[in-house]
Length: 283
Ligand SMILES: Nc1ncnc2c1ncn2[C@@H]1O[C@H](COP(=O)(O)OP(=O)(O)OP(=O)(O)O)[C@@H](O)[C@H]1O
Ligand SMILES: O=P(O)(O)OC[C@H]1O[C@H](OP(=O)(O)OP(=O)(O)O)[C@H](O)[C@@H]1O
Ligand SMILES: [Mg+2]
Image (tube, rainbow, N blue to C red):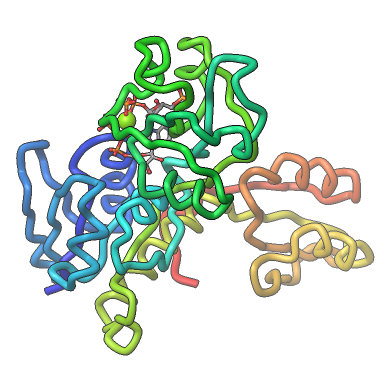
């Protein structure tokens, strides 16, 4: 049975469970359940703290897990990411009261508060900066007001928490993060059929979320120009129509570009342009 770690709390937990559900796996009914067997799919899910997931995976207790890239790196665990999942996207940045610093080079001798001291200590060392790092569990933005540190390093999504605390980010982002699937480093040889099948299912969900199927009718003379707009993933399907001189085209297009492509196809003379959602996919 494949053993998979899933975040039990925080920003990762709901979208991770939704993605697994979309991929056809059973998910726990209530948040107090810590282990759940999906016998039909041969998978056992362990609901763990997101911070601990890379550690369970690195020592081989669990086969794979879903966590944040920032948490994986911060843990220092011997695990690596094998698939980006596109949710819980964030940047990780320094911030302080305006005028404190313009970049990492200014931080020598200062104190930095963070929940990610593994990431921050490495970043400071890589830049040759000697600064003290204080670990806080959360609500790090308040540390400056309360005099625990002059600078913080924290997760930024919309920037609202920083602004509300009267702080400004400075310097380059320390890193960009999103939810990822992780496995033990050196597990290559052992990637078994079940892991590959699990990854294909999640990739199928990503495709279903990112693409729509587009169909349209177009005059034969314009087909080449039309398919240049809708090249599909491999190659579009072109079928003859009963109405001579016309063909029907079918291709996958990125959801985010669908409306623009429809406008351009219409201008080329395409008609009956339709998009439909994709529910599941294996490419
Ligand atoms: N507001 C946010 N937007 C997007 N991603 C976020 C946000 N806050 C945290 N994350 C991401 O979620 C993961 C952190 O999960 P974790 O559960 O440890 O913290 P959390 O979501 O802040 O929950 P809590 O602090 O309530 O326990 C990291 O990968 C982080 O980048
Ligand atoms: O840029 P924003 O959209 O404001 O999002 C970023 C904030 O969200 C998370 O905090 P959370 O609510 O999880 O509290 P925490 O600080 O206790 O982790 C993160 O730690 C930041 O504080
Ligand atoms: Mg948090």
